[in-house]
Amino acid sequence: MRNKDQFSRVTLAVLFGGFSLAAVAGCVNVVVIAEGGIAVTHVTGSITGISADLARGVFDHAATVGIIVLSFALGATCSGVIIGDRTLQLGRPYGVAIILEGALLIAAGAILPRAPLAGMSLAATAAGLQNAFASAYRGMVVRTTHATGIVTDLGLLAGAAIRHRRIAGWRFAMLAGLLFSFTAGGIAGAFCRKVAGSATLSVLGSVLIIAGSIYFVWRRRMLSPPRSAAA
Image (cartoon, rainbow, N blue to C red; front, side, top):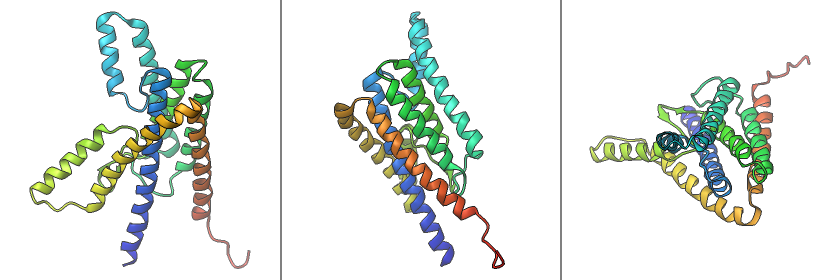
């Protein structure tokens, strides 16, 4: 019973964190597309665009999109350096990574109107950082910055269920929640951008810094060795 309760608590924490990050990514992507014209939370469409630009000889735009793709990869690299493992596990230094993501979004929101490429590159770095936080949880691939993998996995689970295979309900809940949260974040981003413009990114960044700091303090207390009675 204790293991089951622990699993439930951890799973709920993972669901809440994943849904929140997916909403952030949806919001960021909508704002950056509206302000700069290029998606930054995923790279499939961007790489396709680079291919088309190169075929047409539009090298300046291909270079611009290439910088954003490289920025996304740089963010993922930073995540690997900070966290060091792709499997999600509470206790790893996600707080530091979330604080860094928040700082990148604050900077992106501040400079995007004056320097679109620099602002989009910072936002792409933040997205790559977030997407690499964790890519595996209990055998599931988890992504929070794009919907392609989510929709694919939902389809796979639905197909398995049709074949009368037993599927854990929390898997459906996680994938459906991630998709809903990404969509809802995009809707919220569209409304917020009308009011605050690119500063929406800075507001999101500030929220992430607060959340990351809370996790950082919790992690330090959780992992700190208990004081002895003699102390």
